[in-house]
Length: 112
Length: 115
Picture (tube, rainbow over the protein chains, first blue to last red):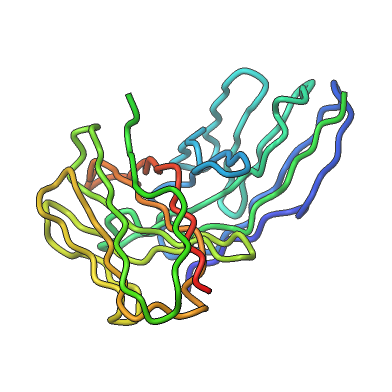
């Protein structure tokens, strides 16, 4: 069974204090690893898709990387508006039609 | 323009009632989904439709019945609501890609509370 574990469960940072979120996964044939951001009372907002080990993607202060066992979401010089829950999900092989398996999320709080 | 829109956003109802949640996407995608987010914030897939055909049904009680009148709409009807059905239900859509994982876009969610 596909499994996704995110750590830490919660992370508090000071504005400008860079850090990383971890997503460890176990799947049979990775077709894609996804990062989403979810604000309170909102739906998950798509951030990145990574397809193969070694791939990296960046967007503003966020950078996602992928290995064969885990993915990291690096946050450089975060701002209070980066506070949100960050969700990691995997899409495995086979006839999945978008069956994403999600982790439990990391709640990020950035203090000014 | 909202890409994936669902109504209602909030729904409070009594046990035993029947209710529906509607979803529409204007992204031109051919695949739509219903996901459930429980109190622990885990998101789990319930159903997936591709071109109006049911593709995924993840061991969901048969009180839950999805209906897709066309590929831009996917509604969720719930019969005989139970307290445990209280959750946030997210509609989502994607364009099927055989060779890669599909990027899925979510709606804003429908907060269902059963009392």
